[in-house]
Length: 289
Image (tube, rainbow, N blue to C red; front, side, top):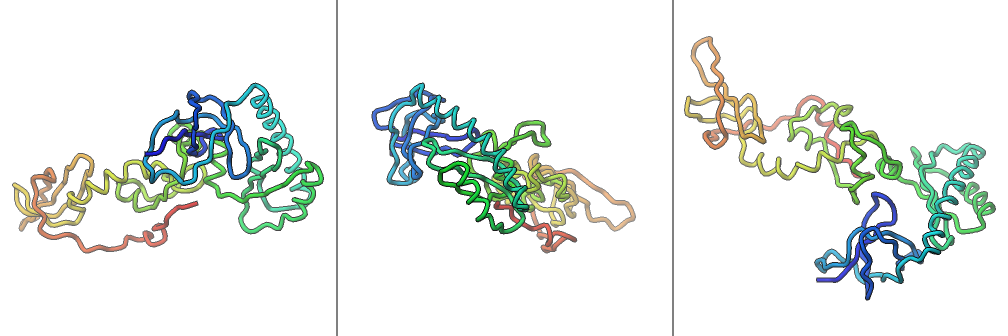
């Protein structure tokens, strides 16, 4: 086990582990830490504690000190500078007629660098833009292209559920999401209904997928031929979470008999042959960005 403290640098951002040394700051307290790009000011997202060695990337950077009033004032000053830099960069983008959308600006704590995050459909030649920005701010300039999911995480907003975006409120990392998850959960395969504001498949499709994966292993699929207490028949509908099946019994007359059964009360005789539904090939995508 390794003793660490969790630090977050942006609201809803990823939590990074640091060596707390002899410090024991409280939750949400500001601290100054050593990072790969110099000293940064962050807030405590996880108090001092122990985690598995496998969860730590060695060597751990250290907590330098608890933030002072001067440090917090510098942080506020940087936030104001970020707003000004955003407006200036937006004007420069229009002046250079670049097909890019500025999303966010981040000023390093020691003012040694300014990062501009943007989205674009393809590659952008922003060399002249960098020169203009460097002449204005007299510091190192870095432009970083991000995906639409990262844009939603930075800007925030409300999802179709009426709650703040998961990515901007508590998700620290994006997980791969596929259309197969929606199919396993019995959701509509209409992309408009299962996509978030960012236009990608909703992150929440991942939350219950592990449960569905386990239940689907023990639940006959639609089209399966099973034996029930009332006779043999074909599964025509499944409620995976409840374990309830609707089975169309074999019949020699014109009447169709459909019975309800629990998955624990049926015996699988034959699984249906796998087949691709119309349009599934085009929808069978995985969202990673």
